[in-house]
Image (cartoon, rainbow, N blue to C red; front, side):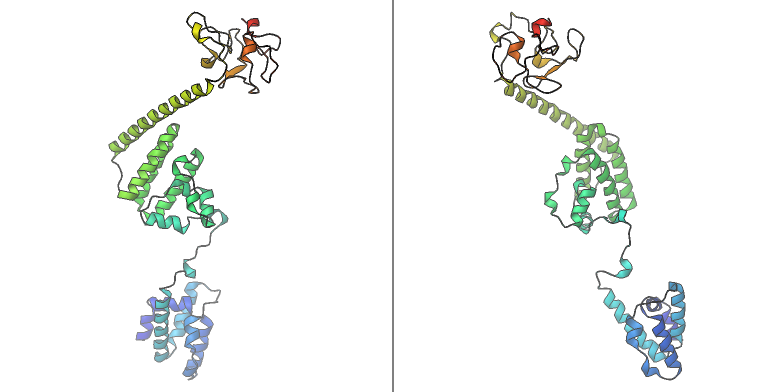
Length: 342
């Protein structure tokens, strides 16, 4: 009876999971007939269950069969099972650990991504988009992935959601909730998306490097400071872009004489007004209250086709046959130049 009682712990459950019920039934029958030397301990230990009964029913029947065995056979089975359990403990993959998933969940987090998070290494959101996860499962080189600060708004929304799922695998619920709140904050400020990306990268990187979050007041202050830095950067970029356009257009024909610019009122070849030049025009309508037909793109071009309009023709000085379009830059007519509109 002592052997029977001890089996009701972990060993008994192992028998129900691993031993073939039919083999146990045969062993019990042979033991009752006095043929104990015919018991196949190898079958009792290593054969997998093929019964269609539930695990609980199989366990009960296995226990009943075990109890009718002789004490020596019971001791032998326990010894073999103990050895088997020790051997299984060193297995990397076990059938009972395998997940069966639907097609929607087939591309779950790759092991490399989970290992990065577990090693407290910053995981770029560009590794968590669905296309990226598929590439990782395909074994592609992660060095080919784009920089994290180039992520699009759609991919940010998707990948930040996946990041919450990743953290739920490696972090406590309180930490997961903190990152959920951080994501909600970011999504509520998407009009400043460039700042959102920089702030999110910094917040997650600092957490992985130092295991720390900013306090609420410091969190808001850091957001404002970072946003101000990016506003200044954006203004600087616009100034450089404008300067580049000016340099690029210097070699083009200028319809206005620089030496007489102080005495001659400038005529805008786009809207027909005289308080600015075509290169500075922002009016959507002409002096005749009609929609403008041209715009300035380093030179004068038609808005509808992007064809280059001949500036010399519009100021009455062109007699050459060339590729530039001879139309009135104010109304689009082929019958006259800008003098016909002013």
